[in-house]
Image (cartoon, rainbow, N blue to C red; front, side, top):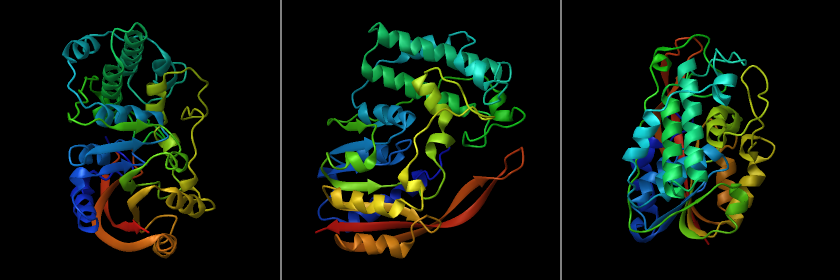
Length: 332
């Protein structure tokens, strides 16, 4: 999935940096991804560490991580995927509020794809309510629907706004793309909660932090994924059809430093690693000053190209170089 701040391309750098800083190997460690997003980091370390704890306060993130991290034994999903693929569309909540043909006149999906998203989402819920599928299969199918819908969304990567005209990738028919996961011997934990509260109740060896860097709220930028995942009716607000959404203290200059220090103080992990960059709300010096109160600190950096959409309708993508910081803390 296209995702703000995704660490997918930095995973080898993270693994190498973490292994260089800690004592022993990561293979016998409990690894926690506290701001998990789409789960790229937790999925990567799932097969490398003893077990993974994943958390995010957004429900769409919980769904993805509950599947990719939480599911660890093989599922027989082919017949359910085939049933979803064969479903005919219905004029449900997504179509009515987020497609051009509905009364919302919004343009997040072409009409037929909006109808199919509705029909599939309703069917998955029916299977769950009738105990036709278990919890593992439910989140597997729901994650599959989220990712499949994202591939045909008529947006410029995020859902803060839709495009005026249906772009090429949004004009194709929705196809089911299985959200397959890695199997492991050990089990894993997945939460949907406030990071600063959850960190008081969990323990492990390696705590990885990838909080929001700036004022962009994930709850608004990815509201459509939450709407599909929750599938609760509400009155969409404004031109973009926003629901009520979570606001993170890490997206506010006024609250980010206090929230960050409280999290570090309460963390029950020997090692903490913070991903941040040179465009964040907290400066390099501010972060270092906080971390040094709690133990030994090292800083690793990596320059890399990130991509962002331009402001034209065709949404060409341009590369800009940014400096990724990885702050490493061995707590006293």
